[in-house]
Each structure stands twice: as structure tokens, then as C-alpha cells.
Image (cartoon, rainbow, N blue to C red; front, side):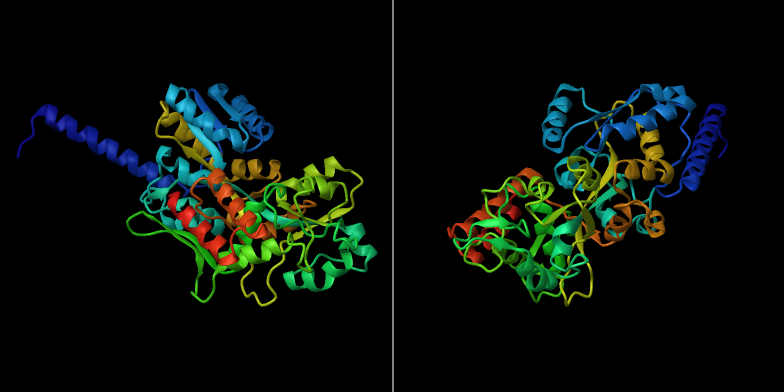
Length: 435
């Protein structure tokens, strides 16, 4: 069939566009991004829960290379403020283009995020590029953000208190901690008043990272936590181990609350204490379960504190090591008025050079598998890098609701409002209802 001139012109145009798209796709490096700024960016606003100073420093350096980055800005919000600020801003039409937040907010923000198609960034590339836990952003219909960093849960320990009792290293297993170290370090009066606490578990409101601790125990118990089925529905597996032979949530709740039961030999913590990090800094608590990024903060809070960092203890019989981690990714919002410019910034930030800088300067571990494999010579980073490779997160429905449910579970057990099985069953049911 002979084409008329304008039809021939249209064919040529579409062929040209198709070839251009193929070139772009063929040169896309699977999430590593480009470490050079793009030519056109425009006005791009990023909101996040990572510290502002490292990211603003990077933006300033990029603007020196490409002045269009003068219109890129980053605004920090605390995790507790972020959700409300984002919802209100989106309602007013003043929301950001990109968000840089942890996976703990993924379920609740998913409907606002523009996923990256697996045709554009294949799942195989994602698995090759990022450590296992960071792949939590790869859901059924695409990648919901380029992973940037992970903050693994660690154990901080007071070296003076340990060495005074003859212990020269942190416990590698829970059995070592509760059977050997705990009896030597716990200090209680005859009326069970605690004078020196060893482990801050059992309560919820004065344990800063209670959610992370219980989550770590869940994973160590073989929990699959929450999965997505073929119809994109969330399947709550908190009470089911991978081999179906145990109840990880029950085991986690039982172990966690032993430390707050006055009648238990492991009694070490109660609601009369301040938050656990404050007690650790004041040297009234010998171990503290905190994230890897907290090391520098603890050092500033008490420069004279002689402490070190270690992997969270594992079960003596464990064949697979596990801890909990917060995984951070940068994501494009569907509501962005500048998707081209925002996408360019997102891809640039996702590149190994910039992503690794953001992670390291935020005192976290990069999400790139190749970078984690190289390790770190940082005082706390060397141990944190090893924990990053065994860290996992789960698709919790909404963090404040999850915290409230787990807090109620522990209180019910501690105050004998429910027996262990009843409290655990109620918590699992309520979590399931939140999705």
C-alpha cells in the first residue's frame, strides 16, 4: 500500500521515537542510575526521614555541576510527623515529587507511589544489584523505589560491666546471654528491685526499638511475616514458620516478656525505667538493642561510655542468621507534576556513587550487594555491614497501628489480662485486620 506524504512522515516519527526508547532502555543499568546529573531537571522536591545534612550536601555539589539542581530541595520530617504532613500536603496539592523513607511506610504509601515496571528493571537485575532485605520494595507489579540504605538492628554492650565480670566479648547466642552472662550481670535487691538491668525487653513504651526487637525474634523463629499472593492480597504469616513446625509470634512474645515478669529468673526490666537508650548511656543497663546508625549518637550522648557494637544474638541451634533492618528507598509519587525531572533525580540518586554516599553519611549501610561485600573499616560499620546482609523487614500495615497492637499484646501478657496464647492470637488477628 502506498503511503501518503503525511502518513509516511508519521511512520518515520514513530520509528524514531521507538528507536530512542530502545536506546534508553538498553543503556539503563538496572537501578544503578547515572552518577552524572541529567541535562534537564526543573523543580523537584524530596521529602524523607533520613538526615537532611548529607542529602543537602550532595544536592549542593550536584548544583555546582548542573545549575538546574538549584531547584532540587530535600526536606526532613521525623517518622512520626511524616505521614500526617504528606497526607495534608497531597490534599492541598503541595506534596513532594519524591519520597525517601523506610519500608515500614511502604504498605500505607504504596497507592501513592509510581512503581517501576519489571520490564524496565527486571527482577533478576534487582536480585543481582541489592542485598536480600532491600528486595522488599519489589512487589507483585513492580519496584516501589530504588533501595538506598539499610539500618540493621544491633546489640550495644557496656564493655566495662562485661569485663569486670570476666566476659571479654558480646554473646553470640541467646543461650549464652541468658544462661551464662545474665546471672553474673543482673543486680537485684531482695525485694526484686532492679539496681542494674541487663536486657531491656518485656515492656513496650520505654523500649525504643521494641518493634524491631520483636520482628528480629520473629525472623529468627522462621517467620515469613507477611506475603503477597497472586491476587496482590497481603497474607499474614506471623504465626507460621517456613516449615510450619512452630509459632514464631508466640515464641517471640514469650521470650520478650520474660524479662519484665517479676517472677521470672530473667526479670530485668519494668516500666519504672526511662527509655532503654537513656539507661544504657547512664550505665544502668548493660545491653541495648539499637540500630547501627545510633552508634555515633550514643558516643555523643556519653563520650566516656566504654561500649561496643555486636550482631544481635542468634539461637544456638540456628542454621540461618537473622536480624531486623530498616530499608530505605527513593520513590516517585504519582501526584508529581514533574515526573520527567523527578525521575531523572531519582535515577541519579539511585546510582551507586550517590546512593552509597547517602547511606554512609547517614551512618547506615548501602543497599548495593557489591558494596556490602566489600565491607567497611568504620568503627561501627564493620559489624553493621555483616548484619546488613542478614537483615530483613516485613510489610507491616501501618507502623503506629502495628506498634499499638504489639504494645497491647505485651501489656496483656505482663498484666495477666490474657494468657500467652490469647494475647498472641488477638495480636495476629488485629494485625491481619489492618490490611
